[in-house]
Length: 315
Image 1 (cartoon, one colour):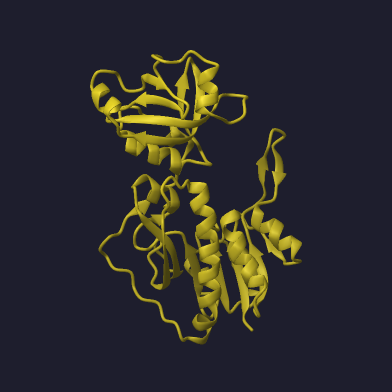
Image 2: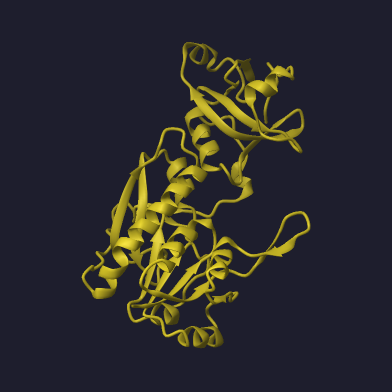
């Protein structure tokens, strides 16, 4: 039985922590980021990993950073054999990486070396990747540069959103970790260095990335809508109000081809039972589900039936 420190913060990490709790090993401590203000009252709120840890009676440690000698001394007291990191959100300095006898393992949501970095799920969708997966990596000083113990590939579904893919990959990562942790501890599974070919980086996303640029092709805008669902949610402006676009579809038909080049990008060209059709830099984007400020999410067809919007320009 190994002594394991688990480091993680958001929902993505919870399945992996749950599987470790159910294993023969002992989770001696859970590292997670400090509580954050949340909601209208901006009250300090525990993250999903902390909630899971406390529910299972595990000690929780929430340092602001890991670089101080005091924090590192505290980690030493747990005498870990292994540290497992899943979407923790803090950089592990060399002293922490070297602390466990078997090192630190990261569950990363891409097929490394493709999409190293903070937002690999969104990056895969934005790029139109057909496959993604999970990498189980030995952590090193660089950004997701360590050697890889195992990969698990999965197809990206047509129309799959970041939220849906996130949930699938979280479970896939937990399964891969559960299969590999014992062979890693026994020294029976050795990591292979990442190749230099095919390295790409997934930058951290922000709310500013969500604004729709209607001069871009419809296929790229559809990917943007999928990648930013459920956060930060792709948005545009209709009649001076922010309109959030939750689901969409790139349309390739004769109508779109005939209109191409005749209308400015962002023009609402038609309303159908399926949605609201908007001209883009190349093709038509059909908005399927939207949300206006202070309102609930509705199908675009339902919204259009109560509003005269054909011919209006989204910006």
